[in-house]
Image (cartoon, rainbow, N blue to C red):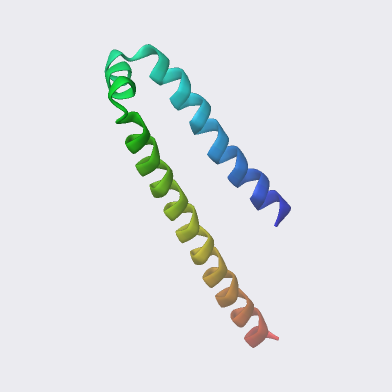
Length: 75
């Protein structure tokens, strides 16, 4: 479980650093930032990422449950 937390935290931090570097160099981002729309874009991206990782965790739990059932039947 600790490895999963480490991987997830790395997956969340690395895109944030990348997005920060990209936004500094794109003129369109400056206009978004000046109009306050950049916060909407970042918020939507964060909501999508959180939803995606929540979905992955649920699928992982279901797969683990199925694997445990298969292992119990094999015994």
